[in-house]
Length: 185
Image 1 (cartoon, rainbow, N blue to C red):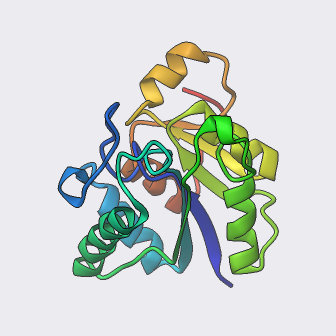
Image 2: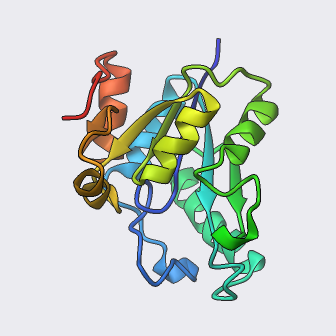
Image 3: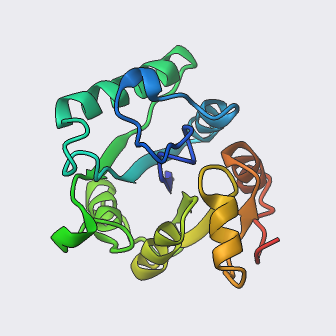
């Protein structure tokens, strides 16, 4: 039986930037994140990425460039023997009021449709409150990492009742050991 997990991209898999990740050269993996994805794949996880990419609507980069960024990510994973199964992205700004931009759960529903699964209890790992909110709205189990905007998220929302890990590698190790934390730490 397959297992499923949904990941945010910027700040979880790769370093984030206040200036956006606008080119493949700017896309740099957080140490241990790609190896964590490899570990998930090795034990049968299907992996989706759900990422807000408003830089497209802001005309900072185009969809072709986003595809090149994702190709770099997938190639780096392929070099390690893994890949992400599907990537969903929202190209809109908040003002567009779309159904896909987190904190709305549209991309998570797309993942559910793609995998033909019920999202109840499916793990969603992010670094922002919008990730936690989207996960909760979709019935997923949110997990917060302290990389990216995670530390800032914890400072701004100290009462988030979600498992918190230093990074994706630590979260994945805990998941694979069956010792997912029950509350923020």
